[in-house]
Image (cartoon, rainbow, N blue to C red):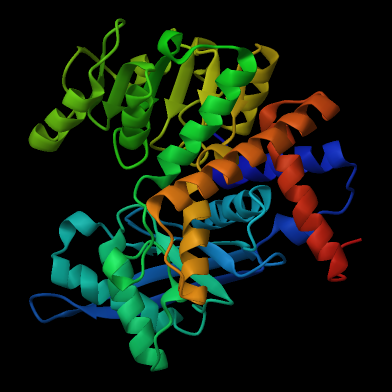
Length: 408
């Protein structure tokens, strides 16, 4: 199976062909890859070393922007692929950012809160030269949250001897975080879905949705769609899912997950079975490489709403397009998080505090404008939504690099 990075680079090359660009060397490799090995003291008093990464993929349009994940499978290829995705995402949404990503090779489940704090602070000490509001702005990612961002912010401010809240986003409200950040990725994806079904003349109450993933993205997406009258017929977590053709009571399902640790409330199905459901919208919202050339022939949804990073491989995307199944790409659908991160960065730099209503309206405009831009390219070029989105994002990066004298 092709890797996430290989898949992303194939999509970039397809976009270059669509634009008639022969030289895209400025986007084929990261600008900067940093690998660090840093110490952290464990609760038993012993020192343990951890490997960490930070990748700045492209910063022609602004400082690198992207999360920091804590996961045992973090690798330089994975972080590079995610950083490339962020560069394309921020470009597509017209944000004054580039693309970055970071991670630590660690299983958070094996460590206490105190150990995770020491690991977070150790990671920052090793990379303090990189993090700056005008250079590289990290945020939460897999197995990190506002808690880790608080530790990272405090360590950076201690090292640099000044307050600099704009150096990191996804912070708690008490540390100059932004309202609306916790559900922003899901809300942004929902705004994209709304635009799509409006264009197709579909009705929410007649639109069936299956959501793979019940975490911060999938859970919020299912709840938002349910609250707006959509028929959410299936949802899953890592252990499996539930299905009801008449529609699930998502509020009950998610409440049961909070109390029991897994989804309940309908017929038990596997994650593989969820992907194969005959629904209007399939929203893979958990992991990459869920729809591949091996299982794409089993997909029966009319629309794929890519809420996870890279849930559909490039090979599978081409097959879906040939079958007449639309696939709205991750760099569009899950960009709500980085849009609200941008809002947090702006508020921190200006000292302003925006209301939740203001943020919601600004997010809606950013997402719907991006969808309309992609729709226009799709129609003009006679291509898929995914190729159109990648072409538009690449075009803006190319123009920035050319103006800087870095592209032919």
